[in-house]
Length: 316
View (cartoon, rainbow, N blue to C red):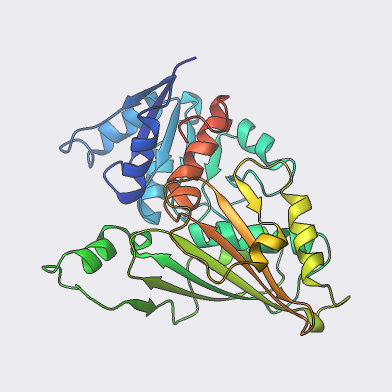
C-alpha cells in the first residue's frame, strides 16, 4: 500500500521533525509545496484534498482555516498537531494509550487531534489514577513541568540560540504561563477526567529538547490513603503491553539520584517514575519524554501508522 501525505506547515519545528521521521517510512509519498505556494489558499486546498492523509503543523487559527479547506467528499484524513481541536467532540484524541479502545478509535478516525507535549505526560499520569479511583475526579491537582526551549517553536529557539535575536537570553531557566491559563490545561482537564482545572506551572530550561512533567501527591490526604506501591501498580497495569509507554520498576526508581530531562531525546517513548516516601505518605509521579518526540512529531507518526494500517513503530 502506498499513501500520499501532505504536511501543511512542513517548515515549522514539528513539521520538519515529522518530515525527517517519514523520510525513511516505507509506503509513503510526500506532497510538497514550494515556498511561493505555501500561503496560496488554492494550492493548499488542492494539496489538502489530494492527500490520503494531511498533517497540520500550524498555529491554531491557521489549523482551523486548513480544516475548513477540506472537502469531506475527498476522503482526506487529518492529524492536527495544533491546540485547535483537542477538546472538540468530532475529533478523536490522538493518544493511543489513553485506554484499551483508543488505538482502534484512532485507526478508524478521519479527524485526529495530536495531544500537546505537557498534556500527553500529564494525562498519562492522571487518567489511570482517576479512572481506577485512587485519585478523586474533584481532587485539587498540581502539575509542574520543564521543557526544552524547542517547545516554544522557532521564536523561542532563536531567543536561546541566536545572539542577534531581539529576545536573546542567556538565562538558564524560566518559569512562564504565570497567568495560569496555559493552552494545554483544557485538554488535560477533559482527557484526564478532572472535574476542575489543574494548577499547571510550566517552565523552560536552557536545553533544546526533552521534558519532565511532575504530579505531586499527598497520599495521606487521599481517600483510601494509597501507598506509592499502589500508585505504581495502577500505572503499570494500565500500560502493560504498551509499546511506547513504560512504567519504571520501583527498585530502579529507588536507586536513582536524579532525572535527566534529555534522557529520551530522539525517541517516541514516555517513561513514568513513581518517587515515593511511604512513611510520610507522599509521592511524585514524573513523566519523562522528548517534547518533539512522544510530545509532538513522534506521536503524530504513531497516529499516522495506526490510521493507515502500518506497524505502529514504522519510521520511529
